[in-house]
Length: 522
Image (spheres, rainbow, N blue to C red):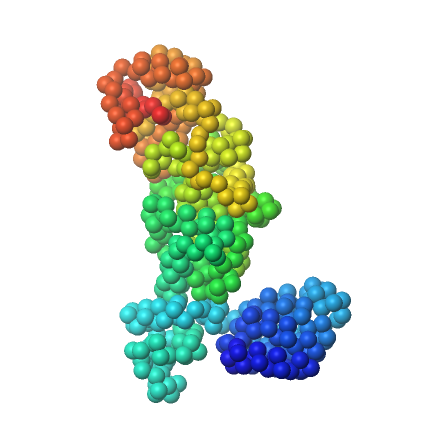
């Protein structure tokens, strides 16, 4: 049924009391709103097999105040909310008998084809092209076989522009193979990313602006390229959803704490998630499936006793987050790609505050720390120096930064305060430290080089097993840091960004010295 026909019926039948709509892919939430506005006398309504959602049902309850009976059958996107007391209150306080036929979700829908009927034709055509190029097929084989089985002799297989939306949807919903469905999801998500990158000032929300700023960063395509899909990854199906879901401005912020495992990879041990109202959704310890060799307790605040009590796995956390992501929520975080990697989640709608914002004095590749960024915007730190991270606090901080921009957009290039500049000058960066150098030995060697013990060493663990680690020496003042650097007995050179640095040696018991570098921060 065409929308204009439905509108004409609704306009000319204002005394209509009974209406049934069945099996039309053109009846969605917009059409439901039209019925609610025009058919004010409607008392009984039945809808079957149409791509409507909860919002359409609610619109009907609000507009048709005389409605006493509502039947919803085989509308897979309608949830149990239509049976809740909310429906009674929305219907003017009168009792509304609501019958929702429970439908087993088809296999294809469970794996990401939910809402296929509401996809734009251009997306459907792209998915069809992918299916043809890769030779993908459904229950009855490929596209040609589908046309033959369903007696579509009038359709030319190679001219998709002449094919109806219903025929495209009918073919794609026959796909059952998990790998084929995953290929469809990846392609649909890539199309969504391409669309989100495009500027549309007249339609953009501030949330969409932040998504676009994230995606336009030069490192986005590298940071968010998750290609190692396996059975334990959660691949978002948001690209397969309706425009309403894709354009959702709901947000959740996530932050994770990671440890180093025996195979050199990072393992998830704690996760914190908050919504845009800063309500805590998750704050849980997670048990990695590999042996831990470094808990990084100084940074993570996590120890062996915490993990012994943990019962949740990465898959459990994915299940907790899936309802939010599948309903179009934007994932917010700071260096969010690292969290998504350990969570094994690939979701196209992201706001990464480490990519959106930068300091005016920073090198192009240097991302701001969450602590410094939060202090520059709000005037207060997330945590004091040397205090372990708290993933809930970090998730709240990232969300607060995003919300500050959404409420009142500001320049994403931030000028550091004088206090921050002075703090940078009072630090020296020690890097390319071999893993065989114990931090105690490094501290002792630096005291000898600096000719002072009046500094605090903040060690940053290696990202990979056996790799180099780094550290920051924090002095009381910029003058003391400058003098300590001058005291280092080594040839002064510059790094690739033009910052002064010197090489020094750490003497080990094996009589095999280890070479490291000490560099100024500014």
